[in-house]
Every structure is written in C-alpha cells, then in structure tokens.
Amino acid sequence: MQAQMLRQQTLADNLANVNTSGFKGAENVYRSYADQTIGTTATGEAIGQISRGVDVHGTNYDLKQGPMRQTSNPLDFAVSGPGFFAVQNAGGGVEYTRNGHFNIDANGFLVSQEGNKVLDSGQTPIYLGPNVVDITVMRKGELQVNGDYKTNIGVFDFPQGTNLVRTDSDKYRSASTSQAMTSSNVSTVQQGFLEGSNVSSVKAATDMIQVMRSYEANQKILGSQVDTLNMLMDVGRL
Image (cartoon, rainbow, N blue to C red; front, side, top):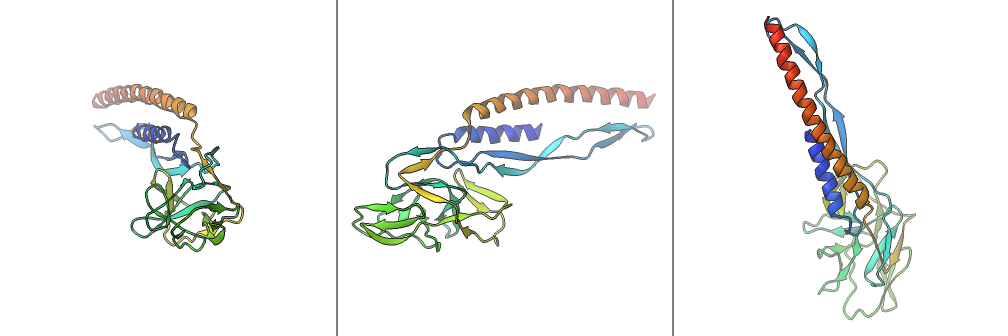
C-alpha cells in the first residue's frame, strides 16, 4: 500500500508538470518482498505463507521526445533527438535539461529561467557580450551574435543505461559522479521552439484513479488477511 501511495505522488507530480517545458514523465520501479512464513503461537509450526507486497526500488524517466511548440522567440531553443542542454548550477556543478527557455543576464551571459549559466560544447559558460541585437543558432548548435560566430551551444547525451537523478522539475544528472557525458552527434537544435512535456494528462489522471481503486481494494484484502490470521491464531491455541 505504501508503494501505491508513492506511485500516486509520482503520478500527481507528472500531472502537475504537463505544461513544464522539457519535462519527462516518471514511473516507479518496484521489487517484491519475500513471502513471510507464519506459524502457530503454541508450537511455532508453519501453517502457511503470506505475501509481504512490494516496495519502490527506484524511478525511471520516460525520455521520449515531447511535442514541439513554436514561440518565435530567438532565445527559445528545443533539442530534436536524445541530447540535453547543459547548465551550471549555483554550486558550480553541471546539470542537464531539455528546457531551452533561455535569457541574457545583466552580465551578458546566456542563462536559464533560474539564472543558471548555459554551457557551450566545451562546458564553458556562454558569454554573448553587450549590445546583443541579433542571435542566430544553427541546427548543429553554432551560435552567432550580430552576425559573428561565438561558440556552439552544448548538447550532450547520457550514455546508454545511465541511472538518472532528477534535481529539479526539468534538470537531471547521472547518479554516478564519474560518468562522463559526450557531445550529441545525432541531436539538432531548433531556434524559436520549445519542447513540451511528454506527459499525457489524460493517461496520468486515469492512472491516478486506477491507483486509488487499487489502494481501496488492498485495504479490504488487508482487513481480510488480518481476520484470517486472527482465526488461525485462535485455532493454534486449541
């Protein structure tokens, strides 16, 4: 039942982020507890086994492409393909995001909505400089400011099988600090677009209803098991 409560929380988080750019839906991973042997209180003789249910072992993220939405904002970018943009967090570490809604800060750096510096292909903060009039980004990430080439926006791939940790609603990192990221060779950048959430609000709402019904059914089963155990204990005392 605890696993179902946690799944309900995960589904609620998915549903709350259906309008978050670059959001990837989450799904709990479960593992079963070993069955427990029960016996009489008088002799300890085994009289059967009882299931101990399942618990949440981890979380998987659905990394499939979300829908593209045209904004025509020159500071909005979307990745087509498996790659992620890289941003520098407040502690100086690197996190990865599909949310390409960027801005220019007062110091001339390209930053995320939260003010984190966006990194280039060498994982260096992208400095655009003063007096930015025109920004153009090509499909392979080449960034031009006022007609002059500056750098390439970094787009990186997580190695296959990477265990991801979500650090914010739209940011991720590898669970292994030693795992190196690689520049994406297959992804492209679309300027003037944002990638939408890949969560289906209809499916998330339907799944939440199913989980609630399953939770209520398990409550009834648990009550029945308690009654059965009490009866067996009474038999064992005779």
